[in-house]
Image (cartoon, rainbow, N blue to C red):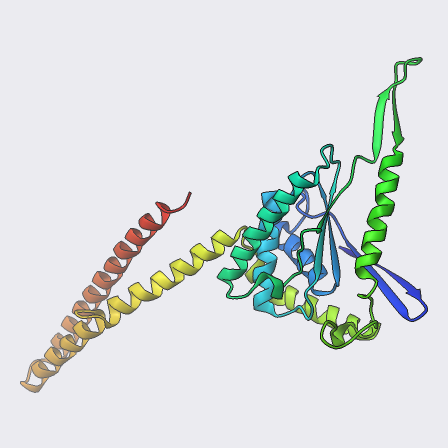
Length: 305
């Protein structure tokens, strides 16, 4: 589910939302629920913290790509949320290593947004400083006197958490509810009541249309389906409206039957022959379409890495 905490200060209101853990093997609803939660957070937030254990993974990238796809189609976002990846349990906290990973993810997300005919910057904000590395919260070792394992929280983790806190509030200092309008603001974030109405509208859209958009696993799956839909439309159009297509052959069949009726042929015999010939034309058209679609699928499979 989704948990919320409301903090008030003079002239400022801060709403913190926390989703349950995503991409869990035990979670009910699978990828659709994960994408619904992620998209709900993006559509209703100025700043989205992605708390992730380990490195930036392909699975996380796929989830974000599907969210971009749904954001573009559902039109639920009124601002461009800023994304901040908080990577836990990092032993190597070299900025170069994770900077490369972030640049690679940004590249893939930009490519995904191009397929949607929109710029990544029009959907989300993802700058070079969008990764924050945290060490393990606890350290452990054997007690030399008892031989038992001892665990304790580290001062380093506490200091880094304070740095993360300052970064969050520094980023969000001008992004609170009711804090601004104009070019960078949105009426949906002007008051808490307006935000609640916006959040309810977003969830209604996700609940109604989300399953049809968010069941995909990757952007490549979406692209393949689009290609297949276009191929099926083209094959069907050619088979029906092309030269010697079903429409032309059916017209010739009708003309022939009409001529036979005009010269006195028995209507029952003409009708039976017409139905038989029409069924044969339809079967031949279906077989031709299936064969052509099979060739398209075979050619497409050859291009998939």
